[in-house]
Image 1 (cartoon, rainbow over the protein chains, first blue to last red):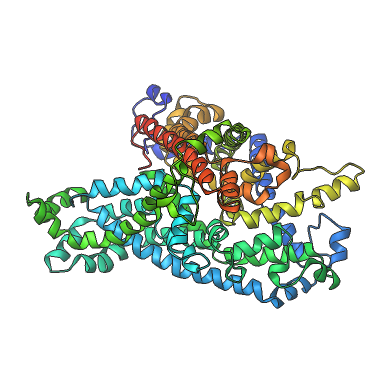
Image 2: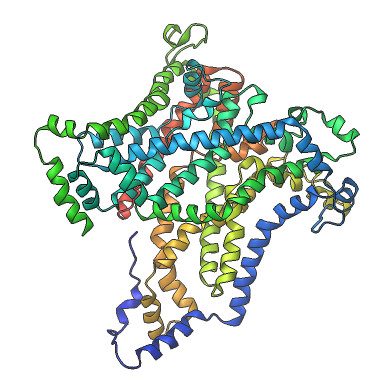
Length: 320
Length: 315
């Protein structure tokens, strides 16, 4: 990214390195760092509000999921648990469907991401060699597909013709390669020093060996980042399941979650809302527990997600 | 350095002027690309053939080939229907509102974070605010509904205070601001990363020079910080204008209900309803194609403008 040169620099005298510079720098550092005290309070305060706005809704739902019905009814804005119960969790783990959907999603995430990575790494490696004839043509072919999608109806017709409706492959194959990730990967491969590859080639290594033994291990930061991009995409996959999976025994997690937490429909769980009420469990309570159930896996891998996604955004920003 | 050695050594492999020989040397590389090409052919280019049903009276039973041509019938039908103005207005209005209200939030948030000198504070706020980005809209909408559903927390509080229920989900006047607000809440933290990266790239000497010149804190922000991220802001703004036709299907779908059709029905929700749910394949395809073409024009224009402003490009 270009660094803009602000106008203020024009007036400054040429800097002299020498005795006393350190002291001057310490002084300037100090001057730069400090905001007036009232500004500090405003800045830190506004950030606190931003954090609270983000965290509180999630926290309140978390507390609700452990709270008995009458407490929820009594204290709508329940910020700390007044009484603990695991009824809602007992209920959602009793139903066979939630765990089934969970494993469906685990399956498509694992298989889908593996396929994504194999195809993306291999194609990106080939395309990173700009010297091969037709490279520009192939890139053009892919970029055009990225910019102009035919829309959901023609894609549906193709998926249907391939016999993928109600098959889990319908959640994996139509999103096998993301052009965005492909380009990101290709750009990263450019930063791998070519002489290492070349000496391997001279030693008689094939393209296949060079890619998997040399280039891929050197590209682990990008591979982890892009792998997580794909994995989160699969975990959160919703529309392809909505379009292509009618059989609710094959629903991935997100589709079941929608029916429970948005449509308040417990039929997907093998019961009705009435039955839930009869068991003295508040539907609100179950919804909260389901939300927590869906959030915990993300929370568990969050340190990785945060690290690599931040890295990914920066990778994309440097030269897309 | 690396690039130098690279050009030198790669020429040894690719220097042959014979096209066929170079292609033969790259045969394994082509093989690496092949699965991806097949994928794009099947899932992006064959659907282009399917676009022809926008100009046909498509019946599943007849298939694409045997369905009769009807020319622009479905496009005319769409452009002349009241749906057209409603969908285009809603799509553009929601997108523009997102830009006006949503775009500045991550910028301001990044600028505020940049002023924090206690690393633990900065990290905590970042860790908290990035999190919702990773939740699906299903889950995040579920969390929001706990508050804004007809019997949700917000309405429990308003009625307990003696007020009336607020029809947040069923009245466009509340629904649209709710969309913008929840979208900001979910995305502002993560959206700030790109600006934080740009802020980290500002040369500290510029600040020192500004101080030497007697600039106060505010003047430093005004003359060093803002110019330092201006190009990033401009690029992000142009790119978001390029995505004007995408009003946020994944979000709107989760909150959508028939009572807000007049103000929240966008092109994508319509195409889904008409094209897949009511099986009006030809009309759905025509509307989807209309969106795709306008979207293509917008994004290509945006990219060429971005390219002209610097060495930045999306492809």
